[in-house]
Structure formats: C-alpha cells, structure tokens
Image (cartoon, rainbow, N blue to C red):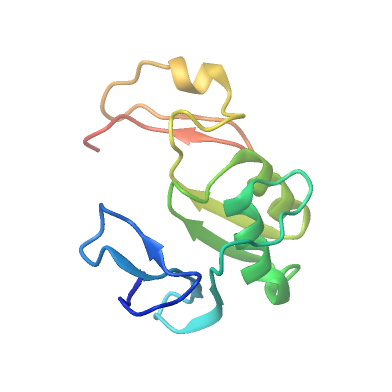
Amino acid sequence: MLPFRGRLVFRQYNPSKAHKYGIKVYKLCSTKGFVWSLTVYTGKNIKLPGLDHPGSVVISLMEKLLGSNRLLITDNYYTSIPLAQYLYDRQINLCGTFRRNRVGIPQEILKANLVPRDIIARQKTVLKWPRGM
C-alpha cells in the first residue's frame, strides 16, 4: 500500500494498516529486492478460469517468467492449491504458507496433530510442521 490521501477512484482503505488510505500495488520482486513486475490495483482485475483473485494476480505478474524453471515464494494471501498446480504445469515451483480455511487443502494435512520436529507432506501439494519451529 502506497500512502495517498488525495482523490482517486481506486484509492483503497485498510484500517489494519499504518497508512489507512493509499494505492494498492502488487509487486513481483527478486531475492535481492529488484522489481520484476508491478501492477496497480484499480478496482477490477482479470480473473483466470480455475484461479481465485490472488492467484490471477500472481499469474499476471509472472507471465513473462512462466516456463523458466524458477521458485516463487508467496505469503498466505496468495498461496492456494489451484495456483500451485497451475504454476507447476508451467515449470514454476511454489513455496508459501497457507491459511487454514483455504479451499482445497487436504483434510489429512489439516487434522494432523504434530509435535516439534514432525513434518507431514504431500508431493506437489502441501507441507506442514508445528508452530514454534
């Protein structure tokens, strides 16, 4: 969120942020912090079939890098099973944290009661470890 209090049709309000008003910007950055791609959220984005809004944003930012055999790391807002499969089919690996209520997470992963040093994984899908590790 870029702080901005002026008049814009696509200005966003988020009460949980330090700067409550601003311009929402999606960025794809390298490990060194360089920006590969950037999109300004103007109120409506293209939604790809089979993906949710965050997944469609990721694909729009990654468009030029698809098929380049890279690893993409996302936070819990963007990570989903359909996005992981879409990227995997295009030679991109996805690593990210999940929200527990995200659709498509296998129940055996969600219900696993783990202790420190335990890990449960599913190939090409999900990895889980206990909190505090």
